[in-house]
Image (tube, rainbow, N blue to C red; front, side, top):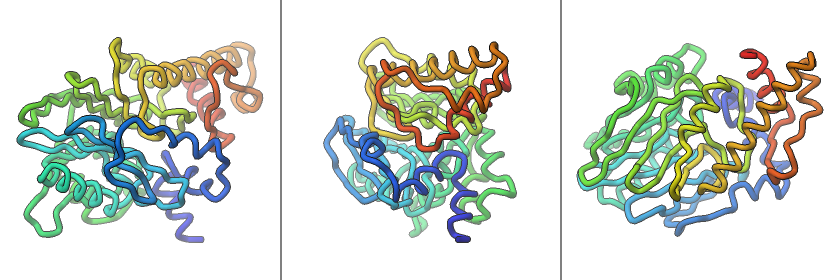
Length: 316
């Protein structure tokens, strides 16, 4: 029981609900991870590594198997002179697994690592990117809020994790990372938390969204600022064909992204209408349903709508 409590404490920001629901997950939940857009170059119980193009790969985590090695999505972006790994995952084993795949696929250990926000399933394993042989230590890039929030006393006390975060470089607003023959844009956007980063290759139209975007899943608003979240999602909308790597769920294209954006709009409209009618967030959320026109959405916890309504009520 203590292991279960510790897991909830460390991952409650985003994904404890997934791991704890795994034994009872219906087929509709499993379908949220089913779509594959690229060739699978590596497969484990906890996820699959899909090729987006010749030098870009996305790790799509599949946590409903019960394997908690990664939990969140992530990826590898390779250039002529550098390799970027995205996300620290929930365990050092997950980060090390991705680093080893980077070396197999590119001939190089990651030179840079971005953790998109401070939630444990995205940052707790970040020390796994330090080569145990001591020959490779990447540059860690996080937002200032990620470093501050992830190092709070109530978070993981792992010394290697703390060392990696303390040595990280803060992305204050936005910056361009030059990997040799490709430029990667890292932007501080916030919304899901106060600490969100987005990683984008504009030339190849690939966006690693962190938890600002979830594919076919209602997101967890537990730390969200909903106005910032809507602003960030609108800012990520692109006119041309784009590959979006969400924080959770299968790879998404423009159609899936538009559906996610419409789902957020529906939640906002429902919260505003209920607030104007004088209903409590709890009562309003209990009766709220997404429009059938938006199709099927995975709701891992019935409290998620109330969390969303609570977040909107705080700012209305």
